[in-house]
Image 1 (cartoon, rainbow, N blue to C red):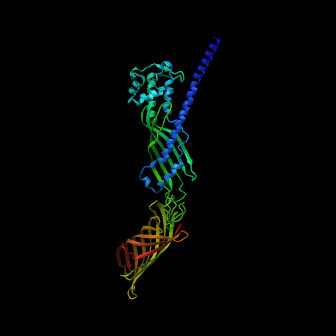
Image 2 (cartoon, rainbow, N blue to C red; image 1 turned 45 degrees about the vertical axis):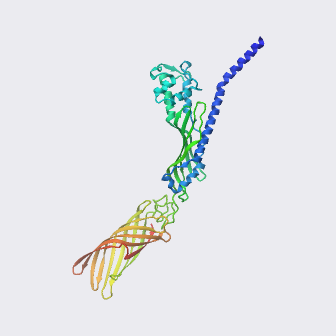
Length: 473
């Protein structure tokens, strides 16, 4: 009899030990299942990066779009998770089991009360449906007296508890959940990349669930090398759907459906170009050109250019020859990718002769006035074209045989030109008038006055050509 009592006592002690270890075993099992879910989820994110097909957009037509393949090697889907994938759902269990025994709900054939709540939610179209499915009551039948939670010491009514659980499940279903975040890392080339791992529910019918996996990120480089095939900035989004099972104990993530990569913003590094006249080093030097061709356009032309010019002209129908010399200064007003605008003034001395020795006419004129020019950068070109407009006031004299007149003149002209760089910030500017007008007043010794107006338009031929030597100021 004593032996039987001893065996009975040992058996009771063993049962007691097993019952006391059950919570520990349950916790170990839960951690193992969570680890399996996380590993499977990491596998799906890796599959997403490897198998995603790029969606064709205007961004993907850019030269550096092919460099996006390099992103695959830069993204590590196994970044430390900031939250367990279904953490919001798991909290439902603790919320419903912290109530005193008399207030707790029967979990039925489900493993946990959280599973029963999620099943009820997935079958419901409204809060009223959820309450009826989960409790078997209508909303009006829910208790309105405070329920004391032994753990949290919080007081709330049954109606408040049901509303809280329903809202948690709704947020879990509708929200986009951040589960991993790599704030920023630096590549071997010095580029910056950051991305986040997200997940949201597409559809749920307990225990079946379909989710969308998302990787959102940005990438940036300094573009120290001129190569339009290299990325400067990019924003990207990987997406795919996965079906699986969700319970309180474990979540599964099956093979992906329609993995894709979408580029929402893509900026390529500047293209390497042939150095135009007076091109700068794209780092902000004070040489003439380079405007609009690199990251720094504000320093192009420094503050301005100045130069001297000599012009030669000949008109066969009048047997007229002209020579002019002068100087000008142009100050930079503004610049962008399409043009650099300069404004300034010019001073010019001009002499013209026409006719034969027996009937020769000569004229000299000194003029001064403002001018403005727009210089147009060209990619892969050795010249820099420009267009300009000037207005001048001049004074001088003319001599025809023995007659001499004093003259004043107002003139304006539209001209085009192109430049060629020499060295040491010096260049040649070849310039020709296209359209012009002048008004000349002549006064002779006898007090007579004569006024003449002249308009010219030369579209296909240029009767005069001016050569200007200019240097950066």
